[in-house]
Amino acid sequence: MSPAAARGLTAMELRLFPVARVDAGAAYFAPGRAADVLARYRTWIDRAPDELSTAVRTLRARTRRASRRPSAGGASWLSWR
Image 1 (spheres, rainbow, N blue to C red):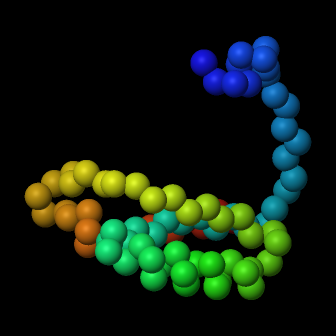
Image 2 (image 1 turned 90 degrees about the vertical axis):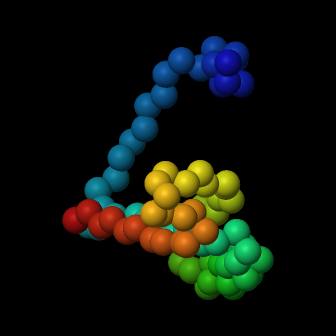
């Protein structure tokens, strides 16, 4: 049980604001590049506008197929207007 559920929180209302465009994406890097990637991210995010929301997550990826190695890296990007 989550801490919020334990305290009795069972519902939440959110107010949405119209936006002209939403961009979202993910980038994957080989584990051996983690230190360099995080150092570059820290430099980049220090200069980013306050309106930008980002997250960093480290994880261990399992191979989905023999032809796709998780250490190969990759990226995906979505944009809504």
